[in-house]
Image 1 (spheres, rainbow, N blue to C red):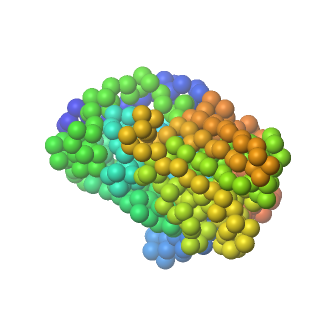
Image 2 (image 1 turned 90 degrees about the vertical axis):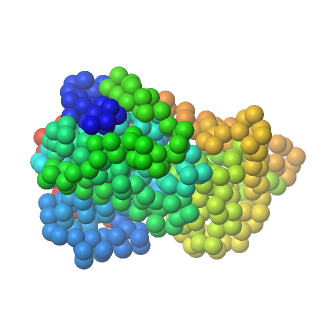
Image 3 (image 1 turned 120 degrees about the horizontal axis):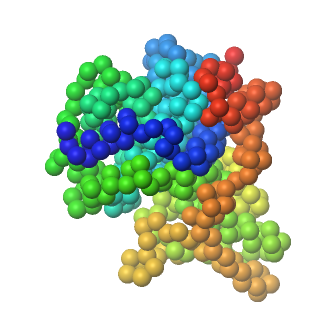
Length: 455
């Protein structure tokens, strides 16, 4: 076995649940809770219904729940559907290596339902999966906008595999085999951002993680050097000279990144919009201006490869999730950005078209000393018709929703209720809220899973 693969397998199999810091359990509980809510919202979307219908037709009956539906199916198929639902609105959390919960939670849920694991077992497996994926990412200089593969899948597939292996109780050798199987499956090209296929990236990563663990459990073989070998996963996906294999595993079990890297979203759109949205909406609240008072909104600091520059003039509103122009224009017109902001009727409004013409995006050139592929801030300047010029900059690593400024329990509950109501009756949403909020205390997941299934 390769040293990297051995080290990761040892961490997955050998980590004592008591060795995981308690604040990791708390942060991940919040992330899983939020993920259940966005899955319920995703189940009501057109592409959510399509993936559910696909699973209904193609998937074998099984013990695992597809959230927001009446479907119970096989573990890998459930992970495919739930991962797609979780990422359907781009309202799921972000941080560490991409969109962690949309991949890790569906994989862990499927494995937990299969094995009868407890809620705390599920949360611990999520933590382990996050740490594996995030440490691999931390040991790499991976710029998804240049390589073209979605980092959520590149790293998340291995994190999902780690979580599934742990819940299935695989030994070290079978865990190494599962990692090797998973190394051949990451996918997701960035050109599909702003379409229904981007959520599918998360679903595929979750499915591949569960599939790899199940195959390895049954004796399926892979290369024991499939991650760090000379023509393995790192060489193929990250690129020569773009990773340090020792750094990838050096701090596993010593530095716990899950307690500091997860950001829960306030807006259902690409996270690269959020800093500028916080700034603009904050200025609107503090100074009381509206769209008709504005001459121009300028946002700068974005690199040319920013995902939110894909659709400066969206053809349909779903593309607006990857258009900083559209998101800022929506905020100007409505004073908020929510799920309804990305309906085609909103895009068709004359006032939205007018607001789009007021948004100016300044690209940061590579020769600028401040250039970053992943800018922490994208400052906003608002020029009002009365001559005032207002400026604000928000750091995306410390903004509301980050671990340094987390959403309150009441805010998380409000988001869950609004999302859940899109698929379930109010009384059922309330029951689901109570159960999933107490996830680490649940002795099994039967009641919790039933609470998010349609009857």
